[in-house]
Amino acid sequence: MSIALTPFARARLFPKDGRRNAIQGCTPAAFEQHLNAQAPLKVLDGYAPFCKLHVHRNWTQTRCLTIPITDDNRHLLRSGYEARTKAELPVLVRWFEELEAPVADYLVVILYSREQMAKEGEAVDADWGIVGCLATAQPEEIPMAPITMMRNALGVEEGGSGVAMDRDAYRRSVEFWEHHANWRLPAR
Image (cartoon, rainbow, N blue to C red; front, side, top):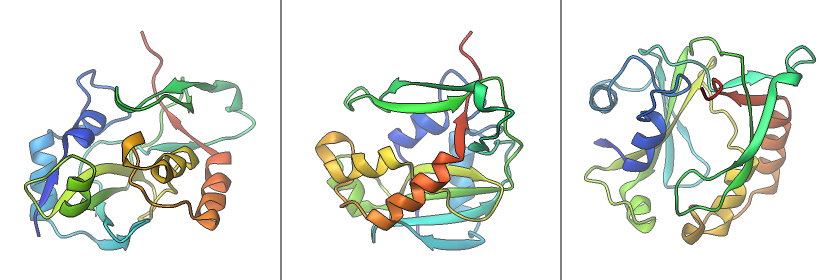
């Protein structure tokens, strides 16, 4: 089985600005090489048949993706409208500023099949394309954000995958994201 880093994931996981809430201490080439050379601790089914999640012990200095929301840190939450790419419509997102998560214990790499990548207009020269990576404290998937589920349901033309909404998965996602938020350092 071969795995390739997609341009979409490269821009998000290895941004040119070097932001600290992306993959740290590893180049894109070394990241891809590691995933092709090292078997995952376990493989999880993703939200659709074309999606798999490979769980690896974190070999980088990458920090956890999320921080629990508490009464002590709620005042540090920020929000704004953002798009992941120039082609997508901006959606409301929220994050912590002035907080930094601990180094993650696991990296949960999100893979799409070659066929799905071609359907979404991003062909890969491998069996699987990396579309994301969740840095976590537990060897489990973080629920997909509710807005990502909605974008997926809107279809490929809106930046999604075309997978219909699963109401139960959506409710589980809301439960998690009601109590957690991503983090980033403030823009300077």
